[in-house]
Amino acid sequence: MKYIAVFCSAQEVDQKYVKAAREFARLMAENGYNLVWGGTNKGLMKVIADEVQKGGGKLYGVSYGIFHHLARRDADEMIVAKNLGERKAAFLEKSDAIIALIGGVGTLDEITEIIVQRKAHHHNKPIVILNTDGFYEGLRTQLQKMKDEGFLASSHGLPILEELVYFADTPKEAIEYINKKLSGH
Image (cartoon, rainbow, N blue to C red; front, side, top):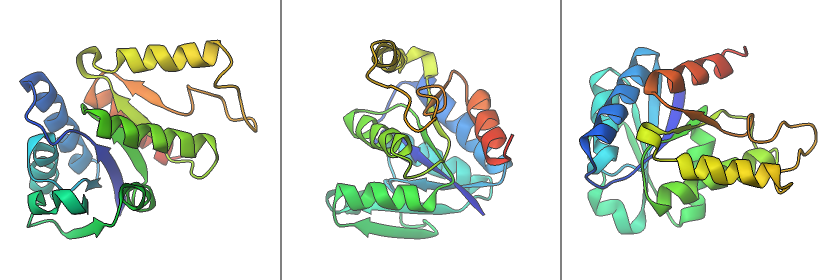
């Protein structure tokens, strides 16, 4: 069984983001993926879990102490991490690919740590940022500037930026990239 870790907001957000999250979750289930997520049963986290579960996928939640009271009760498995470092390690350990949907500083923290770990060769899992309606365009620009200015120099032959993280504009583009990378093509 393959799992995709999804970092996203537990907040109620604009419908354009809900629609993209729902579509990505539907595509996950259709392509045989299960969900690793923050375990919260509200906001985009709930949308993703509802859709994956509806499509027959399994739910593996990684909650955190202060959010445990918001945890989804019908997840297939739910763990409560002792701290944020343990939480991020559990996401990485359980997943085959990682994607960031719309979120706040918590989502940004999670996805950037996963990118740093990939750059340091701690994993080789595909990382995707779903750039719905240009939400992450500033991050893409910042990473490109870091590369152009020499702050993301190639290390050990790993092509920087393009291979570290993939920016997808649509859920379909995101799942196609993940499928391609996990199939070895």
